[in-house]
Each structure stands twice: as structure tokens, then as C-alpha cells.
Length: 497
Ligand SMILES: NC(=O)c1ccc[n+]([C@@H]2O[C@H](COP(=O)([O-])OP(=O)(O)OC[C@H]3O[C@@H](n4cnc5c(N)ncnc54)[C@H](O)[C@@H]3O)[C@@H](O)[C@H]2O)c1
Ligand SMILES: N[C@@H](CC=O)C(=O)O
Image (cartoon, rainbow, N blue to C red; front, top):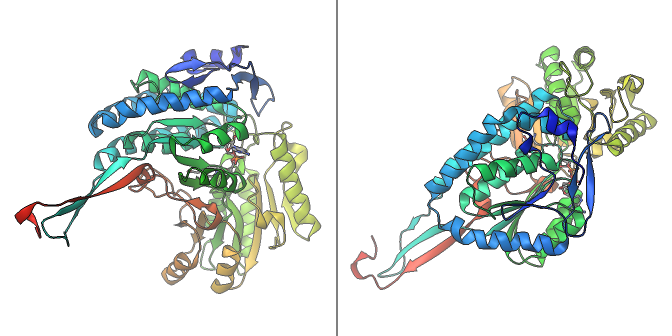
């Protein structure tokens, strides 16, 4: 296996850069000799290689997790908490290296990568503590001479399949919850961004997480996922990614009736009320659209602006957009890095072409300025309509589409006109409008007058075809817990207490 000089040289601690899978506490190559290159999307250069495991090696990961489950679940919650907090401390201590790895494999600007490490680590700390609060309940008995109640027990091995846009936080939000609940995990990261996952494994090992509790398997996505979904010993599958793949995995899990949590695509409306200062709203919309170069499930995909302030909003949007710098995420002052690969650039171009062919106006976005093959300059389209791809699909690119609306009922209908239901933004200071929209919007998360909405205490997730279940918050750990009801009969006089 070739060693990447570039990546290891860029790190203070080169051992964080691993080019092996991690199974049962061992760094593992593929028995069949298959491997894949991983590229820096900014330069197109290979930054390393990963092995593809064979089917029997994926099953060995399940064997390892199965063996580890016995001991991990038997620890007291405070003992698991200690180990998770040690992992958290190491993530913080190695923040800079983790951010460098992320920028090199994902492309996001270094400050954003640092922010994601912080964000990802915060879930580890949150769930370390939440693991100590997996309370059961006492049920007033309706049965004579009996005491009734519930216990919370770990569901079993959890398979975690994650995307490339947030290569670290999408893993920790799942893994920390599962591990705090007492479940070993098998992580299958995106092939584009495996090195963040492998650095997490290295740090988990240093934190004293026992062998078999945190495993990272690598390989051809469909092949690996099929094995994980068909495995009876895996009791939960948590997936973050596209709605298309989410549907597929839900079907594949039917055979073994797994607990399935899905965090899928979004198509967020960004609604601006007539009472808003158009400059304030436009600046917020730019922030909500172009984070991670638009490759964010929360990205403002359809910007719906009241007709009375539409033109002023567009003017300020263009002004703010013009101040964005596109470039290699390792360089300072860069706001937007590359898209993940050439297909993403082609898709963005197709979405813009489709909109223009159906009558939208290109207000800004000159692709001639793109600094490289995987870059896409931010685009603003006005006059977008529901027939266009930019409205129907999650564009996952720096393409902003603006439409004018005339009243609240119309904008509610427009906003809900999508199969997705992850997040929505509302910008207005009118409390009646806020309440009306908040109740009428068919989305799992509604953020009013704030671009930032996520974090460990938040129940993150969508409705409609944006997913099943919630991650984070006080209920996130429930995805990995079973409720066991008990009835203790024949107790005599305690009955009725
Ligand atoms: N709701 C959320 O919390 C959230 C967060 C981040 C990303 N996302 C969504 O993720 C998508 C972008 O990520 P992506 O392109 O990596 O998604 P994707 O669905 O293509 O891939 C996600 C994961 O599934 C694997 N995969 C791909 N094809 C597969 C197949 N046929 N069978 C089994 N596994 C397969 C990939 O290797 C990766 O690990 C967007 O739709 C975005 O909205 C959602
Ligand atoms: N920004 C999201 C990830 C979506 O792509 C998050 O905070 O979880």
C-alpha cells in the first residue's frame, strides 16, 4: 500500500493518518488486495489509499462487535462515560490535525473543518453524560400483588453508514449515542472521506475504548451495506445520506427487522417576511446557502422572499455573494472550497442550465472564474419555479434560487411543495406570522431568525422523505435502547403502592 507523504507530513501526529480498516482493535488490510485511492477535491491529487475488505472480513467485524458487546454493555454507565470523555479530550487535543485531514479529503475551508471537529466532539461529551440518564420508569400497577416498571437496555450492535459532507460529526453523533447506550458500532464511512473516520478510531483506541467496540469497515459501498443490513446480529442501522440510498437500506433491513434511523436529504425553504430588513435577511440567506459550498443538508435551497422587498433583497444578496472567496480550503480567507468531485460540478451546471432553459434569470455566477476543475462559483438565480430541478431537488451546490411570493398562505404552500421535510428557515419579526409558519411548515426543524440551529441538545431530524428518528438531544440515545417491561408478581402487600 502506498503511503501518502503529503498528508502525514501535514500532521503534528502522523499516526492519525491511517490507511487501513480498523476491526477488533487491529489495523486491517483487505484480504483480496483490493484498494481505492482517496483524492483531495481541491487539487484532484490522491492523498492516500484505503483497502476494500472482503465479505468474510466484514463478518469478522460483526464477530468482534458481538464479542465486545458482552463486556461493553456490562460496564456501568459511569464507566462508559469515563472512556467517552477520554475520547472527547483526545479529539479536542488533536483538533488541528483532525481539521487538516478533513480539509484535505473533503475540501471545506480549514476554519469550517475546525468548527466541525468541535461540533463532532461536542456530541461525544453530550452522550457520555446522557448515558448516565437512561432511566426506566415505575408503572402504577393494575395487577394485584405486582410491581411494574421498565428498564432500558442496549439494542445490540449498531451499523453506522455516513456521508462525505460532514465526515466526522455525522459519525460521532451516532457512535457516541450508541456507545453510551452500551452498543458496539461498525462504521462504514463514505469512500470519499475515510480518513476522518480512521483518525477517530485511532483516538478511540488511545482513549481506552475496548477492541471491537468501535470498528471502521471499508469497501464497495453497496456490497458492504448489503452484508451489514442482512446480518442478524446487527440490531440497529443508522444512516445519514441521500434519500435514494436511505430508501434502499430501509428495504434491505426489512429481512432482519432492524431498528432503522435515517437522516436523509433536505430541500430547505428560506422564507423572508415583508417586515424584514432586506439587507439583514439577504446576509443571513447567503450564510444559510453557501456553508460547505452548499453541500449541507440544511442549506437554504429555495429562497422565498415577499414581493415587496424582493428586489432590494436580491441586490444585497449579490453584494454579499460577491464578497465570498472560492479556493483551496487550506488557504486563508477562503469561504467556499471545492465540490466533492467532478460529478457534483456537472450536476450543479445541469441544475443551472435547466433553470435557465425554463425562464429563470442568472443574476450572478460566472463559472469562468472557477479556480479549478472541481470548483463551482456561487450562483444566484431569480424567478425559479416549482417545475425546475433547482426547486425539486436538493442541489447540494452553491446554487441559490430566489422566488417572490405575495402572502403567507401562498408561501406555506410553496415551502411545503417538496417530498423533503428536514429544515426550514423563517425570517420575520411578526410574532403572528412566526407562529402561523412554525405550525404550518412540514419540516422536522424550523429556525426563526437564526442561521445556526444545530448542536448536541437538539433533536435533529426530518419528516416526510427526509428521514426517520432523531439524533442528538435527550432522545438521540433512544435510537440505541430497547425498553424492557417487567411485571414482578406475587409480591403481596406492595401491590397498589
Ligand atoms: N439529514 C442529515 O442529517 C444529513 C446530514 C448530512 C448529509 N445528509 C444527506 O447526505 C447526502 C449527501 O451525502 P452522500 O452523497 O454521501 O450520500 P449517499 O447517500 O450517496 O452516501 C451516503 C453513504 O451511503 C453509502 N452508499 C452510497 N451508495 C450506496 C448504496 N447503493 N448502498 C449502500 N450504501 C451506499 C456511501 O458510501 C456513504 O457512506 C445529501 O442528500 C444530504 O442531504 C443528510
Ligand atoms: N449541517 C448538518 C449536516 C448536514 O449535512 C448538521 O449540523 O448535522
